[in-house]
Length: 263
Image (tube, rainbow, N blue to C red; front, side, top):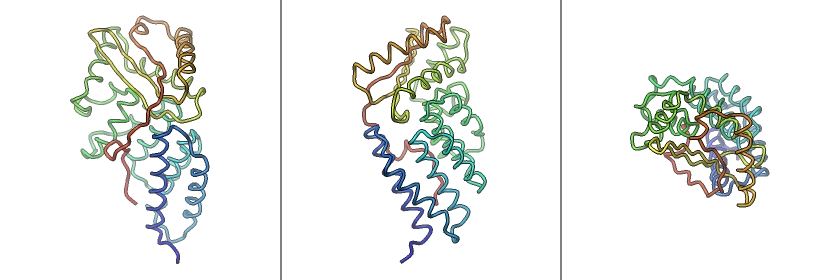
């Protein structure tokens, strides 16, 4: 019995969701499961009875899978195909940002978010976008009203940057440089992170979670310090620490998932 297109799309979403959940739990990329699901998506896209919306959603799922593999070229191509099918613009921008971040490209992750007009979003959409803005430290790209008022990281970070006479772009450039370096050292996408800012003590800390042994992380962090000194040596760099930390399984509950459009 042939599976109905809508049901097939739901099965693909569920399968992709399981891959994502396991990825955040283990920081291990399941190449076999991803390859199988990519094959299923390409097969489903050949079904003539699919609606335009269903095709767009399937391309969105494809983009996620390529993102897990850190294949940003094919991920963005899939999102472009979804865009040509009038896929939701907010979801597209957010998916682009997440893809770039996972691949270690923080600057492009922020630029993708900047294409979103927050004034046109519902509260639900805003709640989906802002966690990604915080992950990418786009603290000066959106008004304070959009950030979680319970979090002091935005205001504390901006106070530190202002004290040194620099902008959020200066911070993002440093994050981007270190993220690209770390991405070359690991075999998984960037997933977990830790951010802490304290303007009173002149301290900003951002740590990327990596699946490595403690000795390997110590060595990596020593090389990150050298890398920073070679590329950035301004007064603000005394206040900014960016390094790697051992991964811990990331809990991905529904509120923290990215904004999706139903199929």
